Image (cartoon, rainbow, N blue to C red; front, side, top):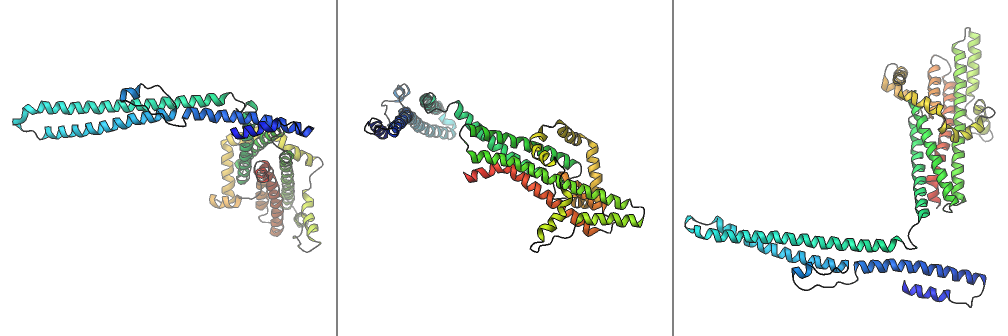
Length: 435
């Protein structure tokens, strides 16, 4: 480091390169010299505190105990020498104590006069062991104090130099961690809301709460990205990913609305079938259900797009619904009504009873069968409607049409769910790959 400091100082003093670029280069060299000098001071202070060589302390225990502190390495060596000597003394004393005890155990009644002398030797050996323990304690104290002095010296060296992280450095780290954690948690909450949304009543309310939490955290992650962009820690690509992520959640909402509208229309038309008073009305209403289902998707070239359009024509959003879907990710998490309705449902014991009755009813009295029949891959806003479509079709001679309706609504819903989760995951998971 000292060699590089000398080299940069030499470069910074060269005046022959007299141009704007040369002046800029010299200024940069001077700035780097200051950073290298600060770094050198840190390492130099650490070397002084720890010690680059060991200074021996002669004499006995008292000399080593009261020796003036030097660096950590020398004081650690001094403490180790005290501990080693104490261990040797303790072992020797322990042998003598053991020998004395064995002698006491082997005394006869005629050797009582020797008992007192042997006991004195045993007790003296015990005192030596205790003194050795105290020496080890002193060695530990010397080591700990040496470590504390070295730590304080290093802390003092790095606490106020130009390399110390300032407020904005810590702020940037804090924002980065918040953005990373909130983005990841939002993704998992979004996935969880999709997995439990099929549960009647309760699942839809819980999915609404989890989805709102996910959107709040995604908004926090986006704000963190915006702050990092303003601080110069993120680029246009990062900011663009966050914005696109929110737009994708809006598009996902639009897909869900389309699927919900489609399923609601199907329920309405099927209700007309069951309410038909005459065979003519029944045929007319059933024909409308078949028309809603459209024909099967045709995979031939030139016909695929038209067959898909035929299925989607009844799920088009009304004027203004598209913009509303785009803005909902920003407004829905702050809607008191949405939170209140969902939390009210989760707090109500009646909601759990109704959910249980719905599951049991769908299973014809068998709860396990009802769970299987209730499960849906669609999101929470559509899953219940699709199951109602399925059960409303019982007794109607239109099973193929109902299956097509269900598949279409589920497909639209899954597309929306995929886009929504992709939007939540975009900033926190894709950006690291691009970096």
